[in-house]
Image 1: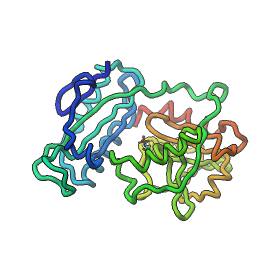
Image 2: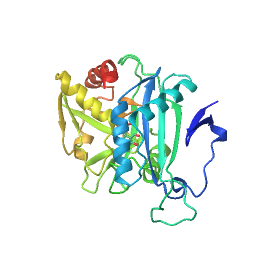
Image 3: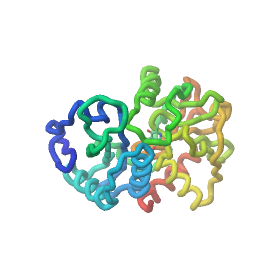
Length: 286
Ligand SMILES: Cc1ncc(COP(=O)(O)O)c(C=O)c1O
């Protein structure tokens, strides 16, 4: 049975109840985080907590938990749920008001909820066993103008994800009205052309993914692969040798089909293998 945390207590998920007047429920008024944890070893813990604190500040939720409180919560949740490969989900909403009114209520206590879910076991990257890679559709990005905030209001992402899902794909790659790559509905995107790894720069159009950050830092430190953070056009995406998705649960995942066409030579690429190997060796140092 899954044990969750709600406002100070651990309990079976079936017993966790919130008011329908919680602003997370009514407005999606909250911030969330997902931290990957393998046998209790977390990846990018501090970066995840920093991003969550930045999100809470950006939308004016005052919580003031110490990093050590979050760490303890993550440790206890993973212990209570079996330590296996887990995504630790942290969620803070603005709290429960006594009415439905858009303005921030005064004197409400934020709701803090946390749970875990299974994530794939990260195998050693291997071209012989990796299989086919992901198939994606693409679509114009119709989400809001503040995608850098990891908001619990995910309807835009959900609708984009569903487009890909209904087309038999695992994700939807998104581009802006200037035909420039933004990200995917639940992951960041990298492309590879002539051995150079390229990813869009951080701005309001994309989430500052922690996996994206780790991949950049690990590749830069290693130095053997050239990397560029710059605007990427959809023409470049469509002519890429490789495309990767990055996220906390998917790590670096290769994409071999986009809009029904093969990416590069249709096989998982050699630069992916090099980057994924570096990532798997170094991810716990961040
Ligand atoms: C829209 C979006 N972009 C990017 C990411 C990847 O972020 P991270 O690497 O921190 O998991 C996610 C993860 O959920 C996401 O929802």
